[in-house]
Image (cartoon, rainbow, N blue to C red; front, side):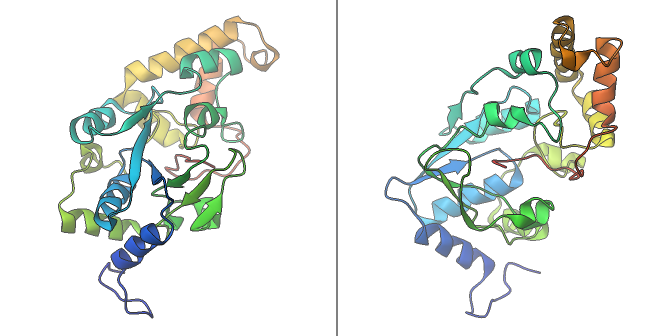
Length: 256
């Protein structure tokens, strides 16, 4: 499928996305969720071309790849940098390591943003089985008076890259190294293979995860007692063994 392909109304994918942005534009403008990934880069450019009001926000997680953070700093100077409700390392020390069925990290690092606003995102159906259940326009179940617009929800990854090439947009260099999705290093939504790759690529961030795990284990909570040591607990976490929920390959949650 190509961006140039026409729908039943004779409109291209880009024209439809621009129309969606204009149709649902709130009086105060959009809260544009910007992660620095390819989808949010396209979303940002579409919002500019649509001529809609928006302010773009990047959530500081403390565990994003350094290359991604540098890319954002260098090329998107007008962003609002949103601080987390709680530092990720203090969060792990207090609650333990996040898992697919207990991703409290998203709640504290990302999901608080955009309260009372219409949040525009680069969420797409093709990304995962979870996101296939999303609607183009939806209301947040967790944060008061927040709703979402996903203007490129029906785009394929190939179309995203086609748009980037066509408009000559800048993107993070990690994609050229074979990374298909960018997000938190050692995110619990990644597979064991991906965690092994991330651990080698960003050893300092992996070490910070382990130190937080050690502090949690040292507290002697019930959640840590099934492991003989913090090392054993951390290696189990990285292995992704015994996790109850289905793995979405490469899926880094946004506002689930």
